[in-house]
Length: 253
Image 1 (tube, one colour):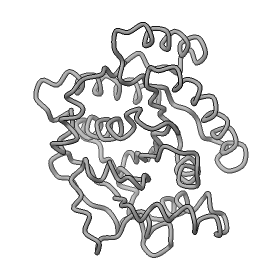
Image 2: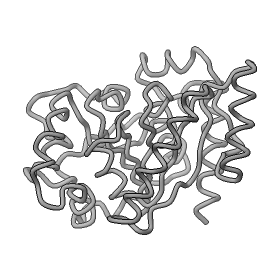
Image 3: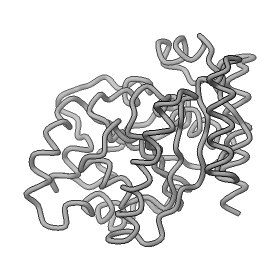
């Protein structure tokens, strides 16, 4: 089982779209995938059709020690994706986690100790746009990080700060944590995109995936329809995410 965290502390870079469509493309290959929504905004849960039933158990119950991960799993049969949902109540996690022992490792230990998860080939964690305790838990649990970066200059600046957090997690909690790769999102034909691509390629070299995810309205339709780009017929972005997954999996070989 391989655990990816899709993370960047900057919002609006396409993290959730990336998680759902990477998961759908991997599932299309016949692999078993579990997504974890670690963002209180719960966009991933919404994208995958969660009904936000208050009686259901979510990631918050796992972090509180009130449920095992397998007890919280919801299935999207159309996408062939299982997921652990979140809702707005997850925003309270930052407050109680800071008071707990080994607070950065709660999710890691929960996933590691739940043998019901052994059947999954991949777990993909959708991280919130922050550097708080939820992100620390996701990075502590992950083997590798996929970093979506919108091709805007401020995104590049934020990447440096994010690297510092990754290095701290690696040094103190998860020595095997790596950045698997950087994926450029919302790519267009502007000079800004070309300049950011040059900076990323120069600073991060082989970490930058060759596949770029372009800026297209079909991404918004995809989330509104609760249907992945992989399932949308003749989707150019769906093709891009398939190619991205090929790159991601090739780096894991």
